[in-house]
Image 1 (cartoon, rainbow over the protein chains, first blue to last red):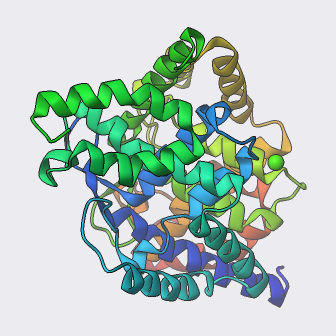
Image 2 (cartoon, each protein chain N blue to C red; image 1 turned 180 degrees about the horizontal axis):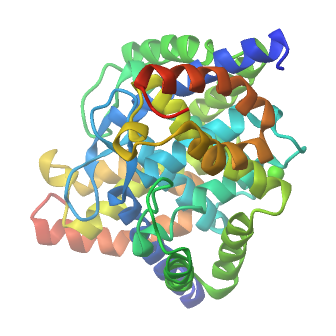
Length: 201
Length: 201
Ligand SMILES: [Ca+2]
């Protein structure tokens, strides 16, 4: 027999986990490497956790990789209510932030209070991008799409007609902040790709 | 400038991460909660990491949740070569094991050797289901589908015409081994659902 307290905890936890299922239906501007379809935010979150683990020694600061993984596991949940915010799109950042805070309130609020607060505070730490773990996590989050675009011949750079200086500013900056050697390694490949695609360099 | 050693490490790590993208195209027998499509193994892996985190206090043994999360992050990668193995399907287990070992050899073999060995050994520990982390991870991996089926009106139980004793044996056993209170909580709901669906109880 479960105690009533346990029953309540299961009920709220499973409600939260059922809501989380919806992240599998939030689609991003980026496509799978085989170009078969757009990527969703749940599988993206899985993939960048693997990036963070495998690339952890390339972080600029020593990081607690497990904290990075937990941040990345959570980082896109708010998109269930607030939607994905394509990096090369034009969004009203203040309005988007307000939507995301309301989403965090609702979603983490489904959990037993102590647990909800702890998950929400880790999400907030990631958003603030100030701790070593958040900085490295953001770098990894940003680097997946350029790597995929290099692989699949341009992807979202073509649809959004991105220039290399734009990419340097919006993607290069956060990547260099967390994993500078990784960006150094990508730069010649990016120059080459943008030149071939006839995009502004 | 990156050193040649760094360049080699980036090359092999990014090759591994690009291969991993294929897990997003391995489809499972289970469907999303909104019944819109089948679930893939990458988003499934993401989701059960969230299960493991949120449900960690319900494990039968105290576990290092971070190790559980890392195991679950990796646990299905071998399906890229070996395919998904539906729990209610009929498979030749020895042949499936051989396929999965070969897949592990190939996939983890893409990484720099020391890293490849460390990831592979964690995957192997999960497969062996003997340590507290592996036992809890397996419980969580198994419990997601019944929870989803309860939510979406039967799902794969109907397509495979599963009986409640079969579910107890194939799913209940590993779940009870790692998270007995969770199974206790599910049992009356399962009995109710199987009865309503006219499946053998
Ligand atoms: Ca740890």
